[in-house]
Image (cartoon, rainbow, N blue to C red; front, side, top):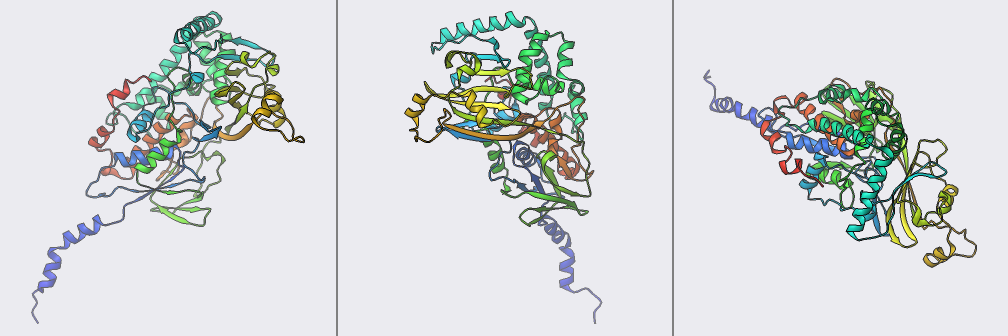
Length: 520
C-alpha cells in the first residue's frame, strides 16, 4: 500500500483554513436580552445596532430580545384617551436640549407636537395654592389676539419679578450651568470615556457634587430668596418629581429645567420613540412576558419567564427599575436599597368647583394650580389639558396618594343643568360633574435623598448590566437615553472587544450640527 496521502486527503487539508473560516462565519451570533421596552431598553438596542462594527472574529451583529411584562411598549411613557383626544399619561415633556430625543424624532420621522394655547408657557395662567387661598396668581385674560397675549405675558413676568426679584435670574443661571455640564454627554464618542460606574460618569461631567446635597442647600448657597424656594421652586419639584426641595440637587436642577420654555413632546405620544427604535433595531419583542429569574451559567445567562419559557443570552441588560419587580438572581446581586416615589395621575373630564378654591367662577381658577409643601394638601397640581367647551374641560391631577371619589366630587363642581345637557341623568343616579375619570398609579421615579448612593452599571462583574442605575441622579426620558448609550458602549467594549467602538460608526451617529443648535 502506498504511503503517499490520497488526493482526497490533500484536498481536505488544502481547504482546511477555508472550512474553518466558513464555520466561524456561520457560527450563531450572540444574543443580547433586554428586560424592559421603555426608552432605556429600546435605546440600548438602538445604540448597539448603530455602533456595532463587524470584524473577522465577530462578523455578525448580536440578536436582540426585548421582554415586556405589559401588553404595549414604552414603559413609563403612555397615553390616555379622553373625549376623542390623546394625552400623555406618563413621561410627558422633553427639553429643547434633549438631543438624543431630537435625534430619535428626526431618525424615525416623528412629528414634534405643537402645544395648544392652554399649554403655552407664556399665556397659561398659573397660581400657587396653600390649601386656603392663592398666595400668588398670574393675570388671566381670555384673548386670542397675539398683542394682548404679549402684554399679559409681560405683565406676568413683572409680577414674578416683583415677588421674587433677582433670585429668578440666579435660579436660571443655576439651571443653565447644570444643563451645560450635562451637554458633555453628547461629545464625540471617540473622545468621551466609557463609564463603568454612575459616580464616575457624574464626576467626569462635573455633576457628582450636586447629588451629595439637597436642592434646598444648593439654592441657599447661591443666595436664592427663601420665598422663591418655599413657593415657586417647591411647586416645580412637586409637579415634576412629586417631592419637596429636600430632593438631591441634581434631580432638583433637572426638575427646574423641566419648567422652562420650549418644552415639547411627540405628536400622538412619546411612547412612539421606544416603538420606533425597537422596530428599526430588528428586535424580537416578547410582550406580556415577565422575566422572573436570571441565572449565570458560565458562558451565558438563562432567563426564565412567567410563561414557563427559558432563554439563553450571552449578554443581559435590565432596563427597568429593580425596586418593585421580583426577579430572582443566581448568584445573588447586591444593589443599594431604594424606594420609588409613586405619583398618581388622575384625568378628569368635567369642571372645577370654584367654591373649593374660595372663588366665585371657574374662570378665576388658574389653568395650572401648583401647591406648597403641606401634608394636608391632597394634590400636587391640577392643570387644564383641553377646553372642549364652556363647561367641559379635561384636567390632569397629580397627587402622592390616590384621589378618592369623595375628594374629587368636592374639587369638581356638581352642575345639574350642565350635566343633564351632556349626559341625561337617571332619576336614581347620583349627580356628578365628572363625565370621565381615569386613574393611573406610576412608580414614577426614585425617592431622592442626598447623598445619593448608586447601583453599578455592571451588576455581577460579567455581562449583566443595569441601565436604571443612573436614575438616582435624575429620572427623565433623556437621562435614560444617555445612560443607555453608555451601557451600549460598555457592552461593546467588554464583550465584543475588537468589534466595538469603530470610529466610522460612531461618527455616523454623532449629533447633527443642525440639531445641536435647534431651539424649539
